[in-house]
Length: 357
Image 1: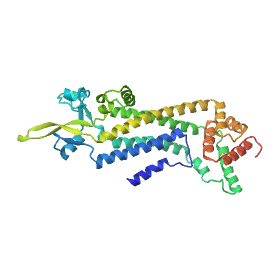
Image 2: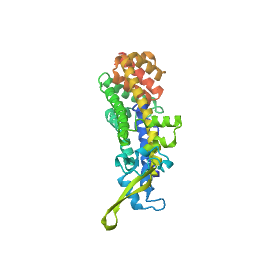
Image 3: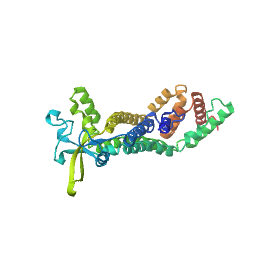
Image 4: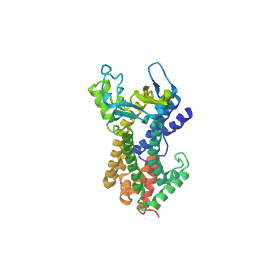
């Protein structure tokens, strides 16, 4: 467990090289970290603890019944969710009903660990695609920190970067399209993950957070808590076995799902995180669409982001290059120290203006 947590900790470490936008990093760093951490917690509870305990009555427990009900799924009675103990329901959804059409089966708790892991993989895929599309260009150009090297080495590094810029200037038209594609995939994946969870929880995940806020704001009775409906702690299970004379007997067994104490908090957190992340991702996409569409806004953004560089030089970058060149220069700037980036831009602009061969 310690080794696994140490590996997850590496996802939060600040890297020297950033080849994307901070909103992009929320998907493959923080979201993947959350999902893998939750996967470990749930799996540990599920396979090393007691995720379910079932009994024919309140005095007897049987590991056979526990395993049987864990595998075959438990259920609650839909019409008994709001009944009180005086009305015959000792717990929300626990009622001696015979009509199976009123049963709501809960099978997701068997798969939560797998669901979280698969989600983590899908959230990492856009970053993996972008690393392939980017091809390690930035890392190859910025593999050394030249701030403390002799001036000759700094000039050599500057010339390599400028040479790369000149070789790709106005030619690489798909660099920005590939980057935007990856960010769009992030947003589509996020919506797809929420739709997937909505299917898992029988079309209740999309409204989960809103119902919880309404429940706490209005001070509703505990029995109307959405958590009781989606993540019941006490459920029923029909245990079938051979009785006397070889006849099949069935008994209603009461089960306590301790694992749902953790599941409800995990998915409530994920609902709020996914909603916040979708707002941030959509805002970032709209912002980029506006910036890429208006050259004057691109120039203004560069001036704000790199105030130590003359506006005239940045204007040359915007006017002579395409969107891919603009994005690549922006990524260069966010990974270089101010003095080195200033040196690169001044020299490149000088070359562009035809003052040097």
